[in-house]
Length: 346
Image (cartoon, rainbow, N blue to C red):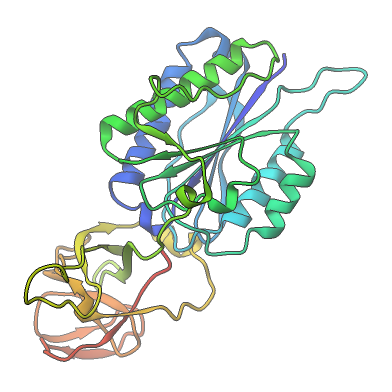
């Protein structure tokens, strides 16, 4: 039986934390449930899930729908787009069966690459490799999650570039339903390479990216701060979103960009294993961050205390606390002085 290989390549970087990652996790479950209702898809579709942040890993190898179990999506620092492209090309080379004089190979694989940010590595070599070796072997559909996703680097190799403008639950469900319908159509085509449907009536939640200006995005719309719970030693992320400048307000001059608090999110212990291990020198002034929350693991009142070693951790107020990274005891107190905080790669 000839297979239709489908690869979901998903950005699990820190900026995806919160509702985007939750919707993506639920979306994989929805996709499987919908495809299993289609007898053609059930017979031909083989699905794989690849996640990328600072590193890239296959979470679910290529397998038939009835045996597929949706994996847990992790979180890591960094958006290694070049590494993700190389990884999926290696997977196609190793797992997709080519036609030969004695057998018919798999149908042309489809890669859905979904990201909400911009690359933190250099994808030039991977893009050149795709253009040279994979442009005719596979279909790449690039989907930007949210208004700030930068798809410009993929413009040379993507069959289609789309943007999911809003990451609301209903829009995300419709987006997953569109993927399901696209895959089902391909599974029914009996090997005919059908174009991916881009009918606006079918996908009102998506916009077609037509130019490099539309594909590019501002990379400074979020600030992500990573911390450690002082009690459990488990990681968490604080997420801040760019606030609008207020220079148009009479008699008000805003000197610097500020970021408003979005939320604090618990992470699993494998966060560091998924993160870019390169030294990160990015900093942001504490005065640029508005608001904050408590620790999502132990419930401590403040999640934005900083040790002299640079580690962010949680505290319950003023007093002596032990840093979960360097284990030094430090006296924590409120201060009117500004200080720099290590900013994660996002």
